[in-house]
Length: 155
Length: 155
DNA sequence: ATAATAATAGTCAATATTAGTCAAAGATAA
DNA sequence: TTATCTTTGACTAATATTGACTATTATTAT
Image 1: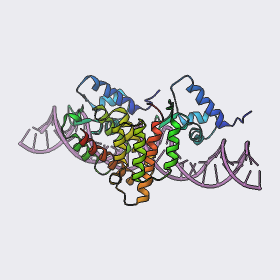
Image 2 (image 1 turned 120 degrees about the vertical axis):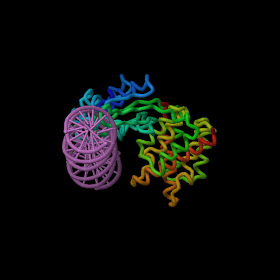
Image 3 (image 1 turned 135 degrees about the vertical axis):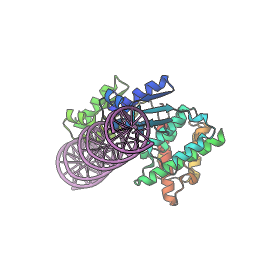
Image 4 (image 1 turned 30 degrees about the horizontal axis):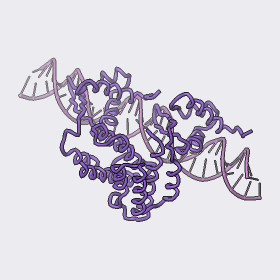
């Protein structure tokens, strides 16, 4: 019943390929044709669902033989992943990106399911309940970074 | 006999679906059309009849292919303990009192050590980093209450 | 070589498609 | 009568879709 919108469907399609392969390399117009959308929608899908917070690296090339290549990266291979994440977060992060970050930490076994959910609840828009979005996003960043720094000591 | 206002009827309709399925996923405008009410009445029904206290989780998405999804969850046995704590906390709590709350949840085995630490970090004064103490205390209250509400059910 | 053209992908803003909030008005119950 | 609950709709917010325009790279023509 889910996945009513085409962006979700395209996301799943790409992720199903990535489940078996190290990376996926597409021709933007081909995927656009396949799902009957305009080419720029592929950019939208990538921009909203294959971010570094989600654990994906994207590279592309224009011109003849151009492509978009999506690679799933394991952030935890890197020793200073926490530093990297902290840098990515900076002093502000949206709920969407926070979800991606926490999801990545869960997938990399830095957090278990319960812990991940606790963090998501603590940083949820409705939980924080502040009107000012800038404040909301900066609070969310502070909380997540605080927790990341804490995790550094524990491990 | 009870009044059969339209909100009650919509409530029963949704719950009849939930009797057979784990969750129900609707398009707000469709249900509104089905019962000839304005869309926002669906929000009213959800807000008054599908609360977490009653064991329902609600999530939604806007935009194309948007939806509202209601899930029935299993409440923990001593959920009323959480209610008491939530009442005690109210809309503001100091760091010291928060520590006591988390500590007691740890002693009651509602939280393990790691989870307790996560919550304390998330609600630490330095983490939140707001100058206004009233704001700090109210944020702390919101975060802890959000987490307590989350602890009501198993996911 | 260089210039022109073709073949890609990227950006951005307008529009479309949902759901959420809130307060006023109306209905019902105490 | 008064308090609470329900209904309504105007306004807001979030997300998705589209297309015009731009940028980059490769290929072809001169």
